[in-house]
Length: 242
Image (tube, rainbow, N blue to C red; front, side):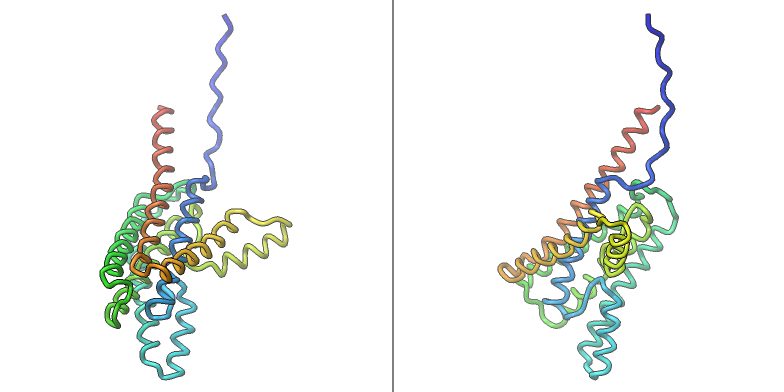
């Protein structure tokens, strides 16, 4: 009989997120692009997740003495701040996982999906044409969801990436691409997803306005399913190793 080969020691644990998590981030970027389209074109003409731009819009509204613009920017900034702060508190215990998202991060994204779904129902009930008060409420709610998403991605650390504000991502993409002589395909996918999410959302807004709110929660749920598959796979691997 041949002697049994000694079991090889397990290799070092992975230090980068896998494909499923990267796909989840891309889906979240697409969702933020869809939300920004509704926010800027159909609500109060401010952004739901790009707060630096809203600060500039706020300054311009103050300079023009335009009360409506000031209110819109302040509502967006307040909603985003509450969402980010609440998520920071909920995910305050660091997990240090580089290859999967912690349960608090996943629950935060689930809360975002529920809020987006509630907004989609309200949007449809208003036939895609909310009045001034409803617009303000939906604007603040949209910014709240983007604050939650941003806070969740910060809490996920190296297992995630920015999904609502990509100016720094674009700058890094260009600089590192020039230095390395090649482009990062996942960053390319995130930048493309932002445009695709915005384009599809705009097309729905133009052709079937009451249905425009459906796309963002669907994309976030798909991202949750992709991210959840990582935890399920890790649990199966741990049981098999016992």
